[in-house]
Image (tube, helix red, strand yellow):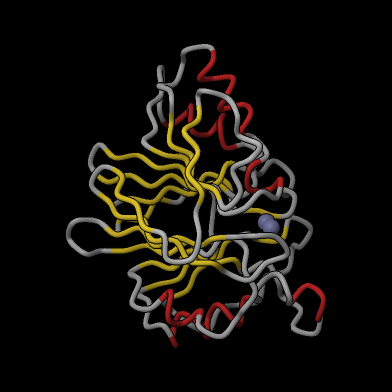
Length: 231
Ligand SMILES: [Zn+2]
Ligand SMILES: [Zn+2]
């Protein structure tokens, strides 16, 4: 299974960068996780010509995670991407176009797409949000938190993931309001160790922050756009 980071910023992009969006591929199976700003142009650079996606997964409906969904709709309506495409989201009411096959996600919901299994878990955020574990046929797995604060049980849902792609938007541990919606860099390091994840990629980097603390855990690294991970 291969993960490509298309955009790694939130809630708005840093200059010249993009918001949350990730491509997961396993053989011919191709899944897009979130589609924040910049995602479609980056995906088109990776997949020249007509596009085929097996599914689009939206963790939640904040603009930095789904802002380009209508651009994907236009692409499909113009015949440049196979349609309909399965669209997983914790809220589906707004997706009325026939190019989408919307599927509501919730805690414990599972689906099989191509060669991988998706298992969704509710996480803690300002709006309804589901994280997802994607597992290939060899049992290798990736867990994407979407946007989430720390909560009791987050170690259980992320347990033993080979790669943890986690919201690490915050640096300031004293910002109580923000801590209700996002994890800090330090919490993600703690989570990786507590959940025994193989490695953690710290994403949803704050678009307005230039300072990043050094990471004391050698199995943690900051997300960089264009980075590719073999899982
Ligand atoms: Zn976000
Ligand atoms: Zn959010």
